[in-house]
Length: 194
Image (cartoon, rainbow, N blue to C red; front, side, top):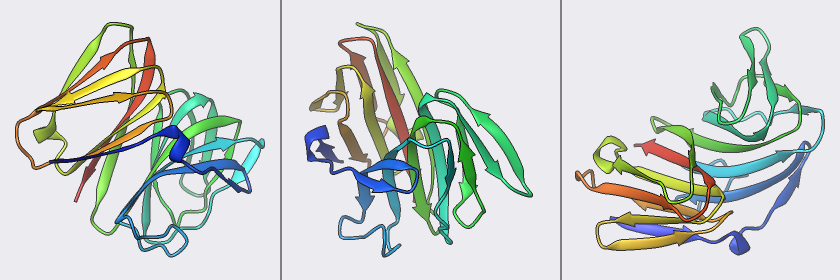
């Protein structure tokens, strides 16, 4: 098992046509988003304009989760739906996609046969949640959107503050990941299977 923690201060936001985006993780580490040679990528985006057109990404599967605000996502010829807090949409990067509304979202991009799942979690101060790593398969991620949290797994203990990201490369054992909240907060649980 391997853990990688990246603190909010280490991230470098960049601009795109719809607002601001921040890459939280890319794998392998020497891959590049613009080169499209990644296996998975995690990011957040702040949609600052009312209408946005998503980047055309052939060969990329996408999962989008709304962290804050509300977003109407349109895939012309397929479907449209409204995404409220912690709602998700899974779609292909080569679909024509546009959105309306202002929101902050969390994005998972995968390539090839790799796929993943996102779940928004709210934890009250002093509460906790246990997750069986054997049910997550290969990679688990925890992004702290709001609050202060303690993550415990085996003999590892990690403190996460708002904006921090944790990646855990599992070995498919029946270990328990425990998330405890020091303050009322919100997190994103990422599950990736190779």
